[in-house]
Image 1: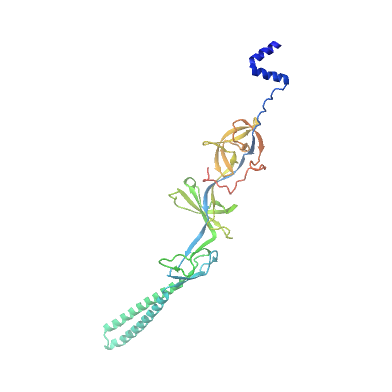
Image 2: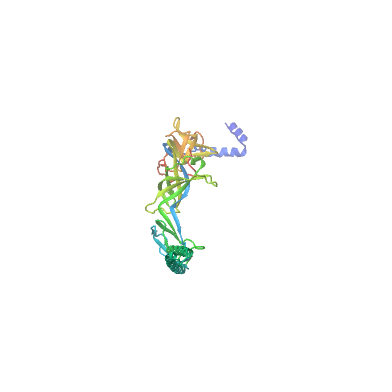
Length: 396
């Protein structure tokens, strides 16, 4: 026995022999083997079957159905502005008064000219009547009678022209009362009393908009534009009113594509009886152009990307519920919180929605079902959300 220990000490050298001697003296146990690493924990949800609407999406801003800049056709100074921004007005309501610069003088001159023309007409008629009486007796010649009749005709024309000029000045004076051309709301007040308005350098005094009905223009690319039709359902979500959707219909489609963006505009009108919506609000508009019935959908977080390929990790229920299989898929409509799967997956299969990073095909996992990876609360697959804002048009 001692000879074996001597040979062993010689083989290990001085340091190894010292370690063996210390272990033999102390009687310390050998180090335990390292414990195996636990399988990663993942969160899974079952894929679902549902009707998936195919929609055209585009950023939009609300615009009034009608808008009018109200100004003055008469050169003059603003005498009074009777309304202000936000006031509701009716068609024909007086909004402002303009003090004309020279119309009163023109009116006085026109009245004087008319009085002269009427006096000349009366004298011409008297001379003509006298000529008619004297012509048969030979006191006046036929030529003088014809001249008297021509004088009457000329005086009548002059009188009518003067009356027309007087009426024109009266109309222009009436235009110094600036009236609303439509029912609506004062959106902008641009000028105050004392400002010069009218041609050639005057501008608009007020801007009136109609807001009981608003419109938006949803743009569609060439692929989707051919499926946009009049009367299709549409809805709009606004940044200023999150979580709410406003429904409308496609009422008009542009006849030509925009040459710069290669898109086609579809007009959608929205009722706004309470005035809650305001022109200029920004959001997203959607037009439903198709419906995929009984489609398979999964949460967006379940879809992984590798180059141009897409895949999900599916629990292997046939062999081991704690093993995942990397499954290639094809996708359709991307609605934000969920994605349509057109090939590679069946409804009801469990897919990994959180914890897929670093997983490999046939990897062992620990499963937690239908739990939010952010809050730890139990959740279900989101319903189709009207606030989803895809980055492009709907897909087939």
